[in-house]
Image (cartoon, rainbow over all chains, first blue to last red; front, side, top):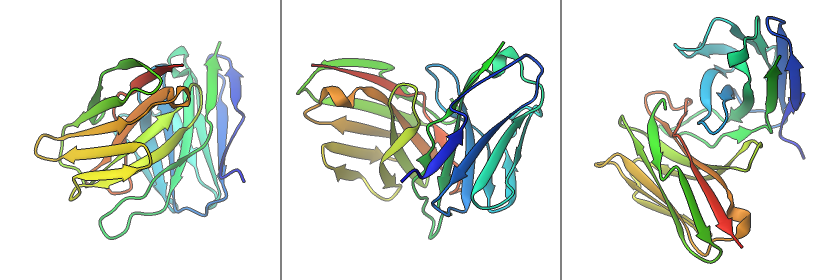
Length: 116
Length: 111
């Protein structure tokens, strides 16, 4: 019954070594999100997709890229991870907003990234 | 945070007591949502309140929204140890598909 799946749950990478985190969903939602959450902080929106339409947040570093090859999958690529990129990365999905109203987001369990 | 602040940052209560958390935000919104996050896990949606609503209930949860004060509160009645988690508010405003989270309240319910 898993709805939003993130792999891996834990990822260790070396400083400067590219890493890819993956997210898949069985909900057939149009909108997918990537958030970064550091310890004891709020989730910070990095970018979101509305279908294949990519929307980057203004303060998301260029080091972070994303791909959405189809409705079900979305990837977060960190090109050159720094120590400051160690965090929990959360993927979420949502139905597209309609009639001037948003819908709830469904979150995956997150991938905890460690940078050594 | 990107949109708002929550207070208190941390709250510790005994099982059976009520817990109240507040969220303040900076801009006009179209809706506000509350989420729960257990330690090291993803977030779970609790309740959504639209900007034209003042109060909503769901089980032991009661959410109020005061758009004139740009604030919302989440009340958990008769708390249980299983309610121990962090609680976040999230708002959307000009883009209904985008959400910004408050700083969160860490609730500890002691058995």
